[in-house]
Length: 303
Image 1 (cartoon, rainbow, N blue to C red):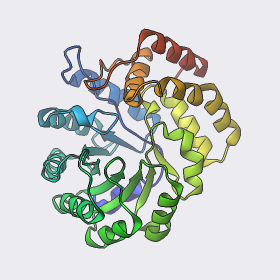
Image 2: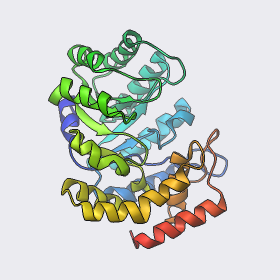
Image 3: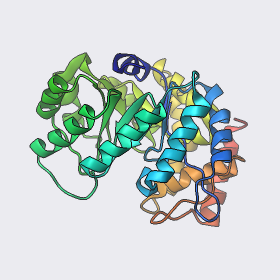
């Protein structure tokens, strides 16, 4: 898949990040991961992100990364494009991006470099180095320590033809509007806040109609129903699902840092598609919290 093809693929439809399956010892479990992808693909996500944030990229070793992305590529080949996460220090991110390309992934999501603060010049050098290291299309994730401004992104767009997408994880209207207005159709734009459904209508109004859904991992039918409602400006359906599921769901998710991932694994377990525990430093939901989530899911009906 050429970068321009990837740009078209992520410009419409619902995107999602499959969780990564671990056994009770915390080791990658390829058999259940394969079954997970087989279960999710028919629901209609346009693209799947392997080893992304919801897939606990931050806890994966290089060997884990190869196994996860390789399994996803083989399982989804010729059916759903796979975009692989890459992140960390510049040379580390390059190594992940090049491994994703070797494995046959169709693109790279460049996750934040984590701890070290950096100015715009340094961030641009980091993104450019990763883009130049591969032929794949790259989507940059503006989140955490990676806070690119519109002018910096315009420079990167000129220097990096394979930088085809921008994912926003800040949720700041002024920043997002300035980027969207300055870059126009040069990028595909993705909403990337946790539980993106809550922000979907607002992002669509800003010219960002596409988002990635984490809850697709355990309520795929509802996730697709909500996305179709966003596309159709069906506020009746959106408001019903916000009131009956998403807002109460946020009350559980917001109890502890890191629960944005942990609650997805809990939901998958309740739905009968157990992915095992999260890896430290994340912690799993308590039994009480799982019961509350199960009650919310029951209201939605069969998936």
